[in-house]
Image 1 (cartoon, rainbow, N blue to C red):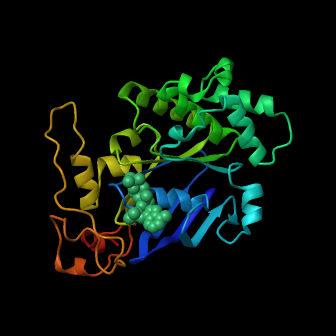
Image 2 (image 1 turned 120 degrees about the vertical axis):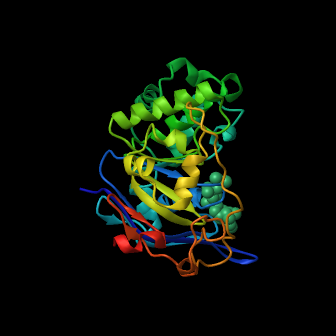
Amino acid sequence: MTFLIVNGLSSRYSSSKGPVYAVDDVDFELNPGESIGIAGESACGKSTLGLSLIRMLSGGTAQGTITFDGDSILDMDESVFNDEYRWKKISMIFQGAMNSLDPVFTINEQFIEVLKQHNFEGDSKQLILDAMNSVHLEEHVLKKYPHELSGGMKQRVIIAMALLLKPKFVIADEPTTALDVLIQAQIINLLKSLKKDGMSIMLITHDLAVLSEIADKIGIMYGGQMVEFGSSEEIYKNPKHPYTQGLLESIPTLKGNIPKYIKGIPPSLLDAPTQCRFIDRCPLAIEKCKELPPKFKTKTGYVRCWLYEDEK
Ligand SMILES: Nc1ncnc2c1ncn2[C@@H]1O[C@H](COP(=O)(O)OP(=O)(O)OP(=O)(O)O)[C@@H](O)[C@H]1O
């Protein structure tokens, strides 16, 4: 029983240098209450994937199919999507949003403004209190201005804003970046408790270690493609793609393993994918990798790597 099915999703931006292949042919699906972690290096298309799901790509277009609760959301009129989906069923915590709180308004005024923008008619006070409650912030915080709050509290306010209309799916784009480690742990615990209450989360991060706490499934992005997708258990215990293996080996462990790093730089997204995106950095590359690998099925998902061709 899936509630979200993403199939062949490709998102492109136009730029002065030509199209940017920011997301290329991505598939994944989620069951109710399941959460997915999206990991990968900077500029590999993680935010673009999230923005495509909430239809907020600026300067870009998305193709393929996204089915949410049985509706094909890329085919919907913008007004229908806005009235019925955006913020109500699918919401997003944008990267760096805590720095965009308006310094001249109290937190309560900013909540009310958000509700106004959504044409909300109803008991706004109760809705705001519910959202504050779900992020464990006390009512008195509503009277404060952003500069009176710590970074962790501001991030909670941003999460509360995303939860205001009680969506069932929240995309959290790097919600712990720029917070110190203790606050990071608090925010991750908060996301965990939201998940426990039944919310599905897409957690976008470049930090694979953070994902283990939240994600039931993981998608590893590289050069705009999801090069591996599967259950988090499979990805952590039996990573298949050499890039996933490299990412996992780059995490420092308490056992004292020396973290390895992946040499080289990611490909330019200005070039359309015609061969394996990882070919220049892959220690296991073979001749066949000059062809674009399809998605080979794994136990719980797929891997885009020719090394798994025989396991079809
Ligand atoms: N509005 C835009 N117009 C043109 N290109 C864009 C636009 N937004 C992003 N890009 C490009 O698309 C590619 C993917 O960017 P994206 O922000 O999705 O990556 P990311 O994995 O989220 O990176 P980060 O971890 O640094 O946030 C990058 O090459 C980026 O420069």
